[in-house]
Each structure stands twice: as C-alpha cells, then as structure tokens.
Length: 101
Image 1: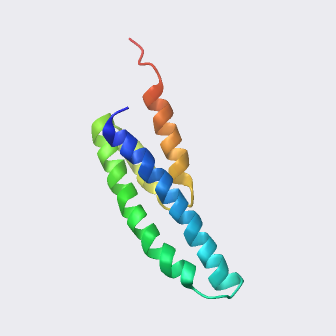
Image 2: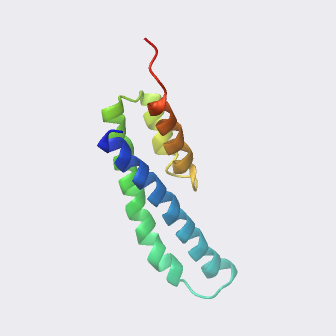
C-alpha cells in the first residue's frame, strides 16, 4: 500500500475518533448539562483532524489518481460524522481490487 494511502487511512480513522469524542463532549455540554470540558478538548482536536483529513484526501487522490468526483466525495465525507470511515474503506477496497488487463 502506498504511503499516502496508508497515511490517509490513519487520518480517516483518527478523524472519526475525534468526531466521537466531540459528540460525547457535546452530549455532556448540551444534554447532561455537566460542563463543556469535552468540547474544549475535542473541538480543537477534531478541527486538526478535519484539516489533516482534507490534506490526506488530496494527497491520496494525487498518488492514486482519483477522479474529480471521487475527490469531491472524499471531501464531502469529512462533514457528516463517521463517513470518513466509509470513504476510507471504499477507497481501500478499490485499491485492493485487481486491475483488469
């Protein structure tokens, strides 16, 4: 697996984990009303993971020669929670498929 694709995979997983942390923090801030420490911690972490995910999509797209539509889909998957995992799995499966001669 090329390095750019491997790094993209790690960043996509980390971005999803940061989403989970932020959503949990938001639950405690807005639903349980017990404070905003989780949002203060995971907000910046998720922001950084979001930026890294976008960079990872662009780097992997360059190495793997993804079409513009696939790139747009990958970037769009950075917005809804956990869709970065779906996109990462899809691209990894595509990479592992044997190329028809």
